[in-house]
Image 1 (cartoon, helix red, strand yellow):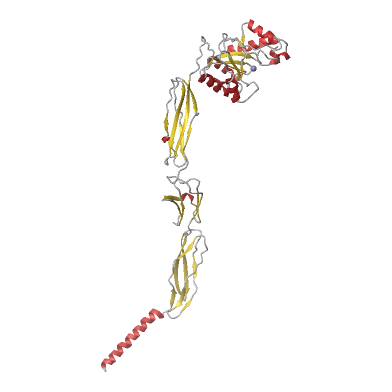
Image 2: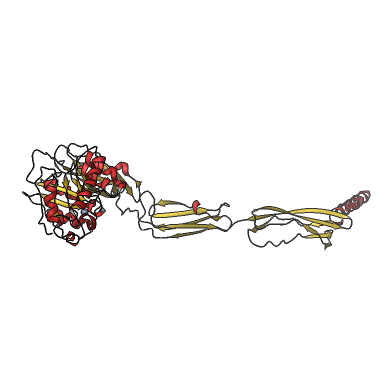
Length: 472
Ligand SMILES: [Zn+2]
């Protein structure tokens, strides 16, 4: 029985201990907050805080109580925000926090337009346009990456939060466009014999490979000691094997070889009236290039181009006298009026050429003009005799280029002249260096003449006279 007593006491003590422990663990009243989970909200959406779950009491009975929330979440900016909950109840206080992350989980938009028919072997596309926009980063087109795998092209773009959008298309690896070669300078080059040929250069561009100028192969040679036509070939291939060839023609011509002692039976006398003017310098350059000497029948009233009269003389051309004023109504009224004007232009030329007294003249309108009849009947008959008597020589022409009024078309002028040239006669060509479209025709006339065995010569006092029929 003693044993029973002892056992009872142990049981009672144990029970009381358990009750005490139970009370302290589950029965005491306190502020109780359910575990707080961090929250997450998508950027640019509205954040609704669910608050916290809080009560006051013990495990058996716990009543909901109020709390205050502090802090805010800016859903327009990515980041982690903290909300603070403050609970005061029954003289007790508790403060807890919740973390709210504003996140971007929206993938960017990727728009790709165009066809992927022909993608270059190096991955370059043509005719395809890209646009990538992200809800948070804005335009991220520059972040688009693409690569080619087998027969697909895969575009990817990632926003700053790591969201990725991917698009893929079937592609055909193909380069259907040939490269292009653009030659510097003309495709037909005229070169005087004995001068040096220098490659004027070229540029080669390919739609896929870009600038491939360095890959151009140039073949062909030019022998500038030998008259003839030479072809220079330019060839280039792109990485896909498309080949382009272009060529340039170099025409090596005999420079004009004028010998005053030996007049050829195929001679052309180019004559230019009414200048100098704005195109005369260009004309002189062209004549120089071919070593062609010509004749300028100059006027005197415009002093702006005086230095060109000097240049004409210095470069071996004949400076002839046309008229100082070129005014029919004044020069064709009397012999004296004409002579006064003639001596004025003679003096002017003399002053500009260091004393060259030109005695080679061309009447305004030519010796056959009939306009002069308006001012004085018979004046041309008198003048043509008079000038010869006092030591002048006047020259008309045998070939009218047409630039005196019939045409302004350079091609027509070239044609008028080249079709009129004849062997065994004095081909005196009338042109005007105050007309740009006429000066433009000169180079082709020279090329035609040289290629056909003509020699270009200036008119001199020894040249055979070319006179038209005097009509007044
Ligand atoms: Zn004239």
